[in-house]
Image 1 (cartoon, helix red, strand yellow):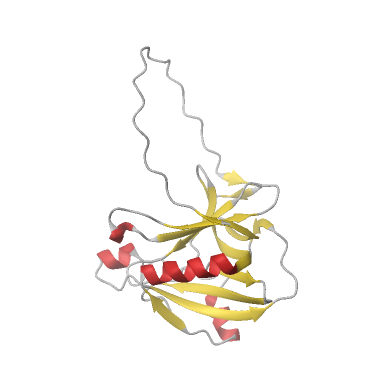
Image 2: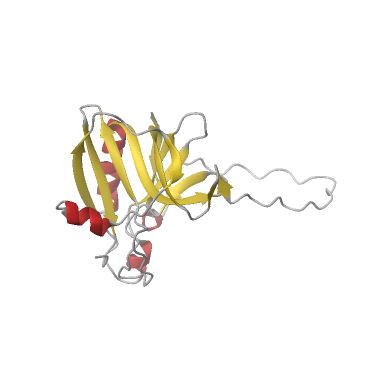
Amino acid sequence: MRAFTSTKATAHSRPLLKRLPHRRRPQTSRDYLGLNQGDLVHLAGTPVAFAAEIDRVPANIDHFWITIGIGADKPIRVALSTQSRKNAAAGFDPRMRVGLIASTWRELPAAGLSKSPCLDYQSLEAATTVAYVEYGRPELDLLLTDKTKRAIFIEAWGELYVRVDVGIHQVHSMRASCSVARDLIGRDGAIRFYFADGTAEMLLFKYCGQP
């Protein structure tokens, strides 16, 4: 597994001497492996790369990416939120609140990408006590780096996006927050890290104001 960083912009190409005839831009497909953009999905596989977002303006940084290999199909990127720019802009606490559910394992789940049933933090919290800890972005980047480096397998739940690349985002609670009024129940996202010693840790993510 490797850490990777964003590439810098390349130099501008020289202008073409002859104008090419106009061509319609091909429409980007919004589905992948029979799944549609916006579907709640479950991803399972081996971590192959990871990176914290880089920007000249630290306040613009709000993601940590983990790339998961799922076998014959191309790897899928998981986008994890590391702070809330909306909360910061509205004068609220931008930090993420992270809950951890520890468990053990004997067999790993099957690798792949599939449509997921409802994932609801309230149900998880009813089954076990979850204490949430507030993390600033740099501290959360370090936490995710450590867990990704040690993990031999990862599961993630979130919303599918299909752009130039294919990935999962919205890996957090989807309840209303301090700065977002939309309140969705049963569409929460999460990530679980499996370690070589037979233990596993599931991380739940909440923004300021989410129950």
